[in-house]
Length: 501
Image 1: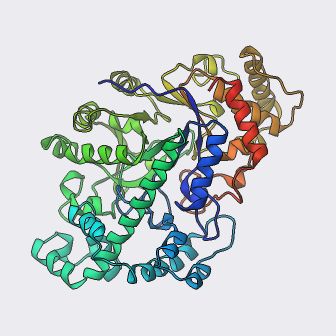
Image 2: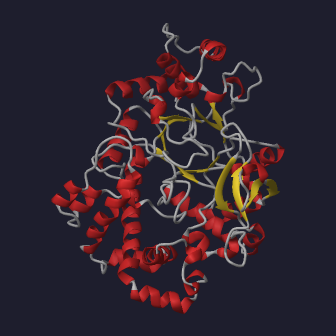
Image 3: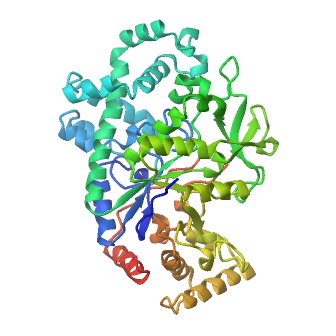
């Protein structure tokens, strides 16, 4: 397998949902274009986002109604108004308070607004008709229509729909054609807006790194449409669920609740489902980060009725076979492997065989252990480095949680690294300065790509943290109050110049 070599450059991690605007959640509208312009001024070469999918209960972009969908919340309401699909009064009514996302209020208000826009949309438009006829979102639109009508998970659909009787589904589609077309419209509008934004971002010399979760949600069109590809019983209930054992993030491990893949079934058609999924992602993004990559070597299987993730076991996955099949179908893979967590020799062998760059988190480095693999001196070129990820404290929050000897050891090691790498010293010793030095060190390592979460670039505290693993609520809500200003841009540009990116 021949992995692509990426250009040395700096990146910023900021999900679309975290952009500011007047409508409660970031969108693909003006602020996204303006944010790309801010990145370009600072000489940033990579913009990393989280999965763009339609979220469900819990609001996580790692649990979706369809792994290939776009999030309807990201549709630009101002564009819909400009297209004559919303009135200015309706646009004003859609405004929400600034600050963190209120997903409950957003759910209650946004879909009625989108339905108003659809009511004025010409469904006979030739471009839209072609989009629908392609059939890429047929399962999704049917699935969402059924959920709208019956208000339940797919395993509680009437039997003929649960088991996907073709005649029954055809009748349902005819009887609910407007609802079906509404969900097609949302994906059509999202895709049109996203591809226009991507073209603009690429034109600024910036590549987009996009995330795909390893697993899909149980209550999704993916499982409903392809039950044979998952470990389900005769009632289409999962026999085992995904997660990870106890680790840095959780004493009891993480019980994600996703159904496990039936890898033997997937082998029979040459991993066609996975190949299509990766291929579709490579059309949406310039580079694809596969989350929980280690699950492609061995995956952690937890009994469906287990109390927590301690009860699971490791099983072997045919990851290299699947990736080889995807490489042939896609004509090459532009992939980053998220290899955090428990990594054994099998995962290391898979990484070496694929040649995909690994992730390095500098926040984990300065604990006083001279053999810590995240220390800059051990980081090679074929890696992607981060101060932290969306699952960590912000860098400032991380430091705020330290005290005494732990903080002293961190500061000592960080300062020694700054000196060793010949980076400019800052006479201050406050935590804001330490965060900035950590950002500069991260950008100065050998990794071809180095990424700063927007919270660390702007030195924001843990109130701006994106996610707390193993917690069911209160996550994914962070939003910028405003786009980064000139001083922020100048600071980042200086980091990038100093680090040779």
